[in-house]
Image 1 (tube, one colour):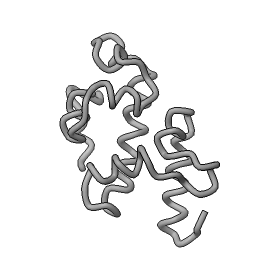
Image 2 (image 1 turned 120 degrees about the vertical axis):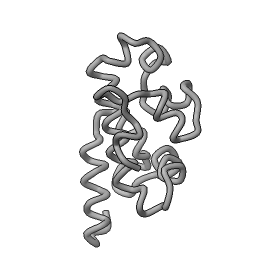
Image 3 (image 1 turned 90 degrees about the vertical axis):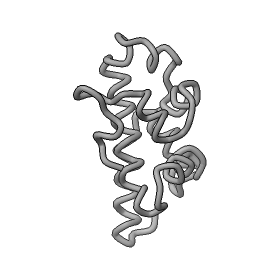
Image 4 (image 1 turned 45 degrees about the horizontal axis):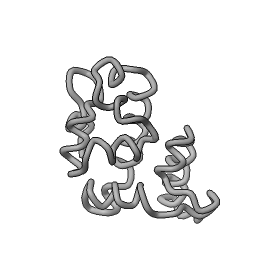
Length: 116
């Protein structure tokens, strides 16, 4: 999925993310480890923290989407599949703990044939 499908006016737009992933605002907020207000109030949507988490999630989803064939399946993987080498944590849990770079490095390693 192209990044612009998740964005509006140069920033990530939670409403567009919700629409693409066919989810709810509440579920998206939980997936990001943020409160509901962070993705519903204009001032909070524009905050660095909210935009960073949205960007991190979109980066991960975009990296794995070709493997799964759709954004919906990539999102299911992001939320539910424990990653080897990360004590059973999912990509979602790692992103919530500011470890998106570790998730992206893991995906790159798997793509390179290095099994984590």
